[in-house]
Image (cartoon, rainbow, N blue to C red; front, side, top):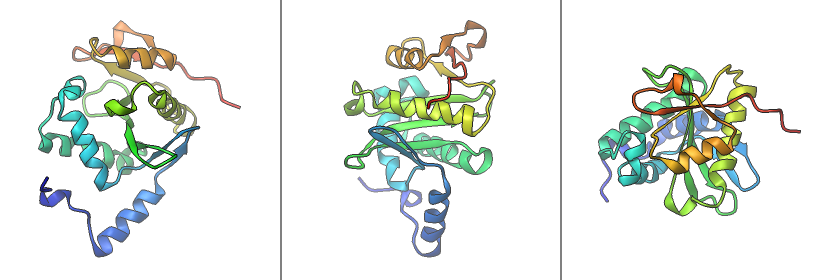
Length: 190
């Protein structure tokens, strides 16, 4: 695949700046996964997910250009809001499993926890580990008072994940055809 010019990894001082910014983002380790800020090369995996039929649950399937804009917006959120997109890696070999995000997108009534994973990563509990850590980060590190997931009602895997994380269905928070799942503040983990 030929990359668009804007997808090329930066060089020189721009590469140094990217590395410094990336290292300043919070990293979270779970038993088997690591959450880290996204790298340019993660975009291909992100685009593979949201440009495929799997993307129908997150506003897609998107074109590659739409995926790029979405990826940029969620990555830029770190600079403007102090939270954003994490790439989820398997600790064992650093392979990318998917993404979790804490974000308050334009138009959303409340901050949201989102998650998308590759088909190969599903069914192993990785999404649960990563999303639980992101949820806890929202409440305890960022001090958020509320957190929801807006989920397409047909996305049964995401509904089950949200419920496993303790989210409760809140019809009063439904937004643009998505069902609202509200996360109570979890008990601190010891």
